[in-house]
Image 1 (spheres, rainbow, N blue to C red):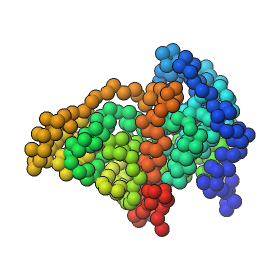
Image 2 (image 1 turned 45 degrees about the horizontal axis):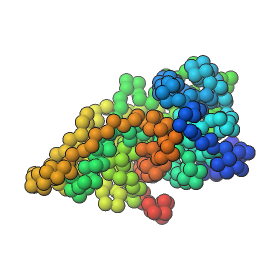
Image 3 (image 1 turned 45 degrees about the vertical axis):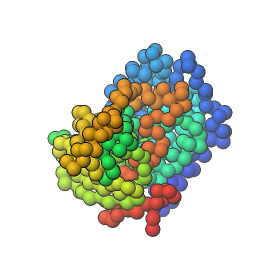
Image 4 (image 1 turned 90 degrees about the horizontal axis):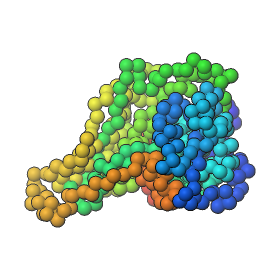
Amino acid sequence: MSGSSAPTRREFILTSATAASLMALPASSYARVLGANDRIQLGLIGCGPYTLSDLYLFFWLRRTSHNCMVTSVCDIFRPHLETAVAKTEAKGASDYRQILDDNEIDGVIITTPDHWHARMAIDSAQAGKDVYLEAPMTRTWEEAVELHDAVVKNKVVFQCGAQLCSDDRYHQAKQIVANGGIGKLLYVQASVNRNSRVGFYNRRIWSDVSPKSLDWKAWLGPAPSVELNPDRFVRWRKYWDYSGGVATNLLFNAIASQMIAVGTQIPKRVSSGGGVYLEASSETPDTYFTTMDFDKFSCQITSCLGNEQPTPLAIYGHEGTIRIENTLDVVRERYFANEFKEREEKGLLNVVQTVRPDHVRNWLECLRSREKPVCHEGVAQAAMIAAHLGELSYRQSKMMLFDPEKRQLKA
């Protein structure tokens, strides 16, 4: 795949979705209906070391109390696949479609680089598999729209891995905002910061990255064809071909969680700035600022890979402010003491604290109930559109205008 003959990412996704023979079948013909006592069987697509170190994906899921098991694992890098098979005692595959062809598999966990998210998740939905997809939802906003529609059409249970969406503090904030506790909502502010001596995205390059151990063409997939480069393979978040860096890979989580608190909306206008000030080898920025204008409020989120001091989430209303750090606090504006006193007497500032299941357990419970998880396709689509519009604004040095109803860019 090279030169002008290479398909666009959109064309690649659409054609791949019809490539396998199972795509000709309606979802109901191969989706298994789970009973209360049926064991959930899962396939893991993408077995990097950070995935393998995450206990919830393996040992936690194998506890009998959840009655589920990772029975198949897939990776195109042989050392990762061999390690995953050894740790899970599951079947190994080098092509994720082998997992989708298995009628015993109920759901898939996708933890691949961002540029593969859309194709794998759409194929999974069309194969009748429920999907847990690590954040961000996709690489582009167009892919997010297509994936959203595929999930809805095929009636699968979809959860995007924005973990903060399962944090009860954001649901508490939702109650206060809905009760009018801080008056008219005006804007939201947050940050996602990291730091490292060597550069946050400059993870250690494995010594065994070679054509003998890695199917490089398969790894590239819909991305432009380039020669095998270990830096691109391991540190892919630095490259626009595979990631939006902090603009999408990190900030998706912050955007999705704030939507839990203030409501899921698609922005109508997004502008961004920043630069590569620290990591000269990176294409994606290490310092980044984005502002999103929704229908009746705005949101500003920042991200820095050279300083980890955060800006705590704050939700600003005309009459008060919600701050979320270790706890949730409501601060009133000095002009509205009487209104706050009245709300306190009516219990409108009280929140119902809930012991919520963690993000993966929430998805697993929904596999049985068929209810929507907290970061379902609607939340994820809106967050992905917002995040990618910010990236486009940064890269094109212009404000991006969007039509939320038509789900398309304005000319």
